[in-house]
Length: 107
Image (tube, rainbow, N blue to C red; front, side, top):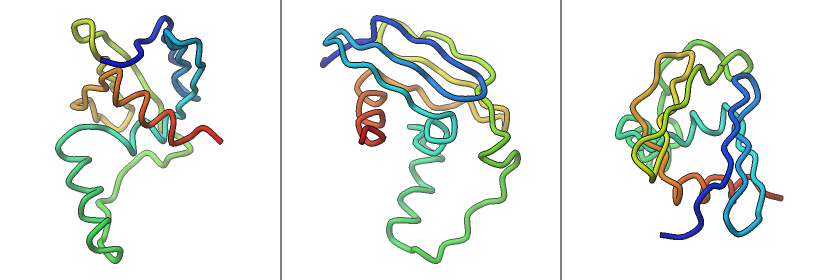
């Protein structure tokens, strides 16, 4: 496994602050966490959009502006589960996955 978090701080309305074991600090917004959920459902939606840019996305509420991360729980010593205000809670965010999506948002 690559880097592991030494600190995780979830701001329910803004996002997840992560300090990594290599000293890098990351911030992932709530909307990006939800959009990049590693759940099977979210992966299928991303795959559909990749192959068909005209695909209709399922209606979701709340909007990205009102979406919150209501809870975060550790899963073993390799991941966290985040529960969102739209009811989504099936994705397990492994350390490698969090680092990958954090690196996508770094300028």
